[in-house]
Length: 511
Image (cartoon, rainbow, N blue to C red; front, side, top):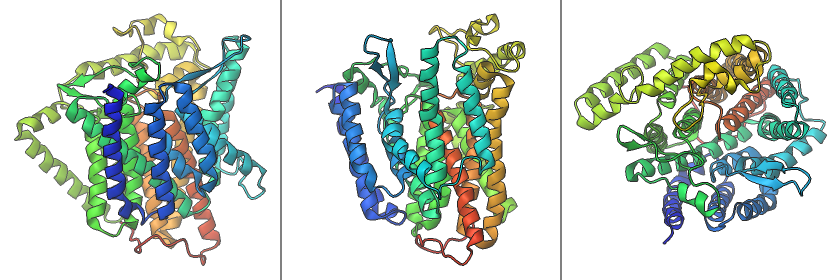
């Protein structure tokens, strides 16, 4: 049997067991019919990926399913997140019909944008009730960044390439942000979106755990069956003798990053789940996946997320003290175990494994600063040719800019970096203000604000350790959109305090 078919059997077994076990828990968060539809579409998209033997057949089948079922979704972001990680973003060039090289490059993420988000965005633009662009301070930062990047796309002098880049910016950045921020108008919509993301992430977590235990990447062979380079997302990378899993996102750091975002979301969702055992199981699955990613940036990001979340809540000092004692106890236990020492060696700062990666990141920043200074305001499109960065060339013949902020500054200068940082900082400021407002009238919505705030802080740290590749940007643009949607929900609650928000299970305590 072909390897990708064996991988499909494993994926179906893992996912179907998960859907069966999780159904009782998820029914407390979303309607049963919605969960069943999500499950069926995830299975169908996975079968299309593994059985198509062609990128275009996979795209056409998946696209047809999305167009058929999207009208049944009241909250489209939930379905978008469920399917976001059902397939790697395998690129497929749309032919240029002999006039140009190619029209555009389509992949799984863009397919979801075109089939799910674009129709919703067009409908939202036509509604008078949709909050106008510019009604949130975050909008101006996003629009400013988009405008700058669109102008810089024409800097090399190739108009066709520039137009492609502008289209990609609209699909990759504007659509996730706009639909997330404008289509969600109540707590139910936010809950659906977070639930969809967590459901997809838990499957990723199970796949990651399987991959590290079996030293087998389940999504590698399917790339070859689709007719593309099987190693386009990298080969079998090891750390301390353990495989670094990719699951469907193509990179172990990206995998850990996605799971950290899900961890932030589950802090809020757990407040609506009745049984402590169900809450513990969900947290354990995600925590296991984060550990299995063997990525130090997401590990520190997860710890930072928990610290910020606890610091924003009641009895902060007591809970932070308990967390510190728990970490110390875990460290002592690991130190006493042979396998635990292996994990300690991989920890940042105190660990000794793969120190070359740490040194490379430090050297990258040192090498990039003169280039940034030379093109201070608007950056340079060919910054990789700078002699200072040529010394960072790796054995594979690439210069890996493993820092999203450095990458933005090199390409778009300090103007681009200020706009990019402004998006995150403005979102954090809005979250802080509206979480305080929510604390007085709706404790459960305040918990959501704390979860979103701590998640944004965590990803701001993680992207300092990795470039904005694969799923990283589409996740943070969507997350920023959810933050803007949250502020709108809180404002509506303030204006109509007597209107009860939808019941979602047991009464939530701020904790």
